[in-house]
Image (cartoon, rainbow, N blue to C red):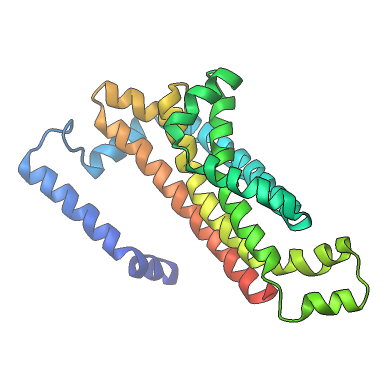
Amino acid sequence: MKAMTRFFRSSWGILAILLFWQLWVGLSGVNSIVLPSPMGMLRSLAADPALYLSSTAQTVALAALGLVLGVALGTGLAVLTWFSRFLAGLLTPLGIIFASVPVVALIPVLARIFGYDMRTVLAIVVIICFFPAFVFTGAGLRALPPGSADLFRVLGASTWRRLVLLALPAAVPDWAVALRLAAANSILAAMVAEFLMGTSGLGYLFASARSDFDMEKALGASAIATVISVLSFLLASRFEGWAGRNWR
């Protein structure tokens, strides 16, 4: 009962919107092609759960793998820029320019390189998750406690020891912020890539349902992606809070 009470206290606004949505669609008699109802979406989910489950499993797997690879790549390059000012001057502008290119423009190029399959979707997720990790980790590596860098130099600590014992621990809270941002965007990136690629997953399910004017199925795919994205954001936010309490 306590858990239910907490749920309704935190989610009553969303539940009120869904109730108003359902009542308005029912009373106005608007066609489901124009605006599907929440109950229609639930009926679509219950009618073919295996279809949604398989599509969700693929999208979540690609998003999770892309998140890991993108964050690892961004963190690794940020560490390299910490080691070398030359690499910082080279990699930082390239990273900014590459991250500023719209996803729609990247997909044709990446599809020619990796093929019109899941590898291109994975590459898009890696690119989307790379930039927050690169920027926030790089900033965290340089946001050291006052006087700590001078103390390590006076004690004769090597560059490697300063990285492992000082810079990396100092960067953990900023790295957690990057993880929170990338975790939510990874699902969206995977779904957008699947939608544009027309292969499989929740994005393809949404695209095929839209082309068939089955908007209840399209809404179901969107709702699943939204729920997973919100849960990813909340889990990453918990980790960010833990890192902020224990690493600052």
